[in-house]
Amino acid sequence: MKKIVTIQDISCYGKCSLTVALPIISAMGVEAAIIPTAVLSTHTMFSRFTFKDLSDQIEPISEHWQEEGLKFDALYTGYLGSFEQIDLMKQFFADFGEGALKFVDPAMGDNGKLYPAFDEAFAKHMATLCAKADIIDPNLTEACFMLGTEYKEDGSYDEAYIKDILVKLTDLGAKTAILTGVSLAPDKLGAMGYDSQSGEFFSYFNEKIPAKYHGTGDVFSSALLAALVLGKKREKAIEIAADFTRESIVLTEADAEKPWYGVNFEQAIPYLLEKLK
Ligand code: PXL
Image 1 (tube, rainbow, N blue to C red):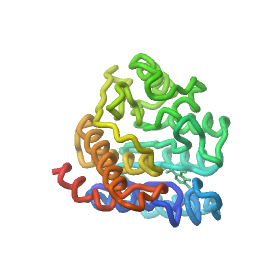
Image 2: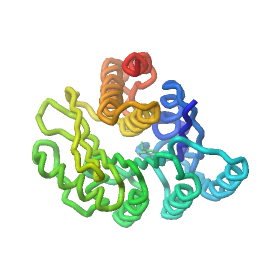
Image 3: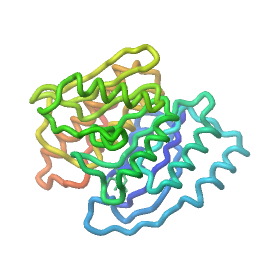
């Protein structure tokens, strides 16, 4: 069985990071190992949350795994809580990176703003981890903060702006950059990528749903990486992840409660598995 290790926080309530990555990766038939970087009562978009840092566990876990000779098909980092954790991930990539796909989702913000815990210096430091990745998948907000580029709202940018950002992201050092939440037409939303080794751009767009929910980036990244590890071609993997994310939003919108804090990815899993066939 293919194996992914994902390293991010566990927000006990709120459907993001590990509570999203674990079920999605497992449902897709890929073994998921985890290293929780912190335990929070909820994710940080709630007005209050507890936070217990687990940075001091990362090295001992990594050392034990090296003694056991563990190997992974992919290393997947998500939300990280400190400069130190970013540096620990660089070491983890050095220790476990051989033969593994190194995937960084620099989860730091959305809609033109960084999450409460972060500032511009943090985004610049995250860029130094992105430099060591095979694939990164920031949204436009995260990309702009890492590059120090002006963030533009949907409808006020064109393809040239996105392509320029993609090339600059790979100039940081990442081999492939996939920008999520790209909208080049009012009714379309999707992802656009750039492979710096072949010089190819690629994209996938589906119908835009005029709603924003938390945790969609984690849903997309988890499905994308598991599909890639299963051997799906890049374009197909993006399509699977984007359509699954969209279906999760559709189901959330259909829910009378429309919980703002996370999407209904659970009931979209049968759809995901159908798409994977
Ligand atoms: O989905 C990204 C994410 C992950 N983990 C924590 C978060 C967020 C977004 O706010 O707060 C703790």
